[in-house]
Image (cartoon, rainbow, N blue to C red):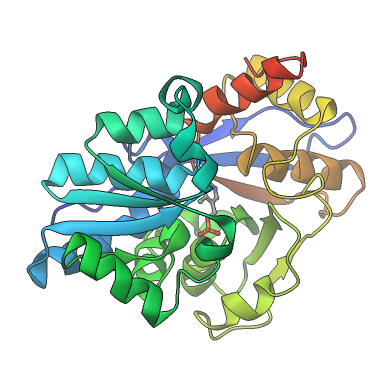
Length: 309
Ligand SMILES: *Cc1c(COP(=O)(O)O)cnc(C)c1O
């Protein structure tokens, strides 16, 4: 196995609103799986890199935004496992920014891991799944194993089925943040029938449910909670920053501003609103993504806003 099967620990946290102390909140620390191939990205890459090696590829090519956790993880996996990596990045303006490597910690990190970049316009980026676009990439870079944006495909879902294990059967609710829907699909597939999986989309997207249904064959034991995206992908406000900082101070667990921060804000709000039964046991999956804090702080400081600690 290039990336061995790992099991992460569950940590109980005390961050319960007054009057709701009988509800138990636990966090599955997938963020501790690997220092650089963070959280769910480790799970999503595991079978993909194995397939790439089996099929004889020496190069991984993938897509992402300029602050993408997936880009950072794919670059680190390539370095550790001996693949060349190419990142096709949304935003061609980045190519002309002299200071992109100092201003963008994600790209700087990926570069330090040996990733080669191709910056494309937002219009071209939308064509990234077309055959013509991929053919063009092949003529430019030679043959490669293609990992989709966010890493999501059937192999990624298979990897995410390994997040839960039998000892997690004691929980009534499993929660996770959602980008493309690959991670929650794996969790839904491996959750037991007495468990309910709650997904917190990090973006406004009406088609996420359909995306998830491509990978799962259950409709009853999961639900999307769409009230906590804070205006859209990578959008945050002072209330969220305050929550993430307070959560870290009280529990010692750092949350990322794009996914896990919004999910936990949502869980705590729902506890306050009596969404959960009195004795509920909740397992929140910490999908990692902490590399995103640096880049977000850079943007917050430019707007003279409070930073994440
Ligand atoms: C990528 C990512 C997600 C979203 O995973 P999907 O499989 O795309 O839904 C959630 N949390 C973190 C920290 C991530 O980096």
